[in-house]
Length: 291
Length: 291
Image (cartoon, rainbow over all chains, first blue to last red; front, side, top):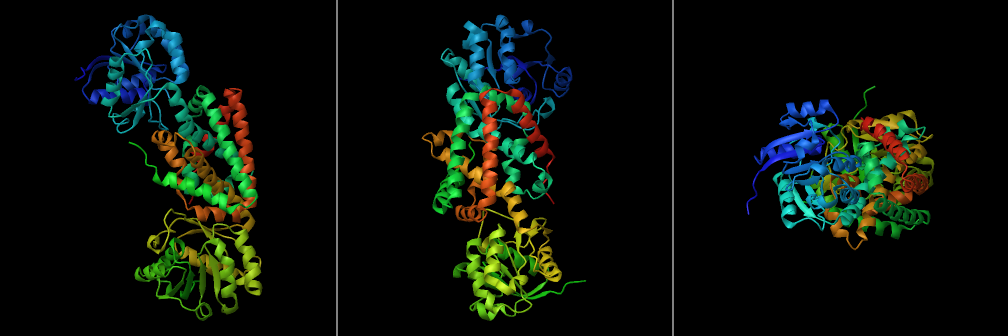
């Protein structure tokens, strides 16, 4: 069944994630009006100038009642407060989705703050991180071919999930579904842990007296391994804390793996080292970024 | 003082490193004859067909006596045997350099195998790793703008060091000097440790029952962090063993760093996490690959 366009979308946090969502729906010709809220008046002004927003919102209560769709694209730490402020004013048919990198915490906030209206919230995680931020970094093609993971709630109707899925698919994202807990475990392993490890390596070297000498001989291996250590400290602090339990488990497993490597190295166990490297190489060489 | 061309160069191990060295000197018009030895007859034949070699060597004793320069570009583990085989036949003016990724072990071999002729050996480490190997992967421009580290010995004459430096500079490499021990400590930190950590992460995930699910959600952060886990298992086994002492020290320091992170995470210490990430980010964002 063809989905109708969105008459009105309200975006909280008009940065890379929120701004790109609006631009993509506009480009698809599937939204009539986009209203934005945010903490920085300058950023909102710029979003208006860039054609991301039709209007800068002044009054949350007045705007969310007749919105078809609300996107929460603020840092995850601000979402509980935001949900509390919109909950009383939500229209009966208004759907909410979000752009948070962690899901269990956002879902917990949603149950607490949205109460009986939690069925209207279909959580999402668009995998489109970038080092840039702000409305100026937004692009209509940010999500093209990128993964978006929905973590639907038992309370969501099939129609609500389909409608939110449709919005992300209009961005040309590849949409899949996990439970919030599955999502957080998966991303602890393949995203949050690597970020932590990359930050840790650079921090380790940064403390040394001979840091400049070391860095002057760092080459392409170091460059790629540490690219993600240039990510936002605030954002990664928040992600690590939000997904603390799953991440701690991953970190402990990884430290155990390193202790095994250390033992193999200490005993000059060539066979063990080669087997470990070979198993890793096989998996990595056969891995292709999807989709 | 302008350096004369090399009349004859002998290359042991005509793969990416050895083949590219020959091609670069040829392109510079600075070598009259290149003779190659290796374990694979097919690879040598291909090197001949690709114009890397003038001749495939048949008799080590006959070839090394009148060579200006010998490049040892075999895996580091084969160098001791190779040095023993060439030592008795070296000409008085023949210089030797190498392409090994570790230096203390190669230098130890050189003292043991070359004996009184060790002054003729000027060790080198060209930083031009790649996932490919074999003569077919060789390219005249492999070393352009890449770093080559010489680790001269106290026995080397200034003229010998200058001559070997000249050869690498003809490849348009950027040549610097460290002691063998400094070299191994630096590369344990900025290259060998990251490789080990990248192998460890992929190995860790590869053991899981839900490995395919995990890998299907891995994205660009994972891709870059683990690119080096697709490196050669044999080569990295050898490098890790050759530089075992320095690498073990780095690994222990890194595990201690991770234990600190783990403690910060366990106690939800937002300040500590952010400070660590921020210090790393600052260093990484200001780092530029040199030269």
